[in-house]
Length: 282
Image (tube, rainbow, N blue to C red; front, top):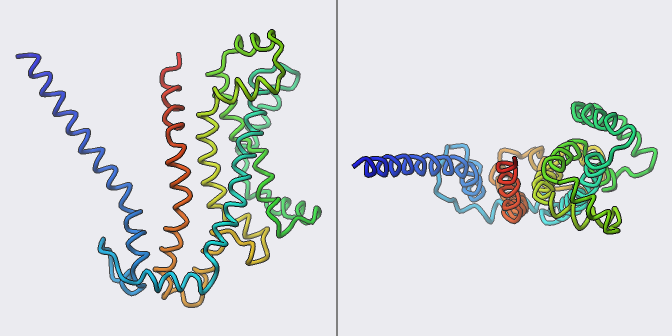
């Protein structure tokens, strides 16, 4: 009898948990559904109020978007910036984190504290100096200033260092070193596979940040042909006929979300494995 009561209570709790999770999923997905629906409606229909019934103005909104700019060109420009910046922002910080975590050298702690200090400084404070530096190197209106700074991601270095310290055994590195493995070989064949869940996690966040970046591309890029998608989208919002462009703006946002969703779906399993590894670590 007691076992039946325990089973019944377990089933009730499980049902309540599933209901709460379903409601949470609906709440999270509702804004995306509204965005897709509004992409098919006219501005007048959007102003009137909320509905989940799709409209018939998708072709009209599509025409409005391409009236102001080439949407696919903007997506390509964003990919040209986001993909290299994400790769560089994962590889080199991982190498720096490995050096700080596994090598005991003079100045190690000082460098670590400098990284912590730079994490606390807002990036907007250095925009003027960064622009002047780019002007001095004649790289204004190029993608170089949007890609190369990812190499020095202080936040990524800090968190990857902590992950390496907690997950990588020093004896594993020492054994490989005694077997004659080079340092670069150990980094690629031992460290990266172990730390890859954390690297993938930060790569997702880095890609999203680089894809959605607006302020720096707006300052650095002068040519409309080189504008990334967020800059193009703001140019659409800043048009004189903005009241007629609400549906087009929603359409741009919906399309711009596709690469982010694909990247997240592809690498989300590594986020789960990273969280699970941290949960069972003793």
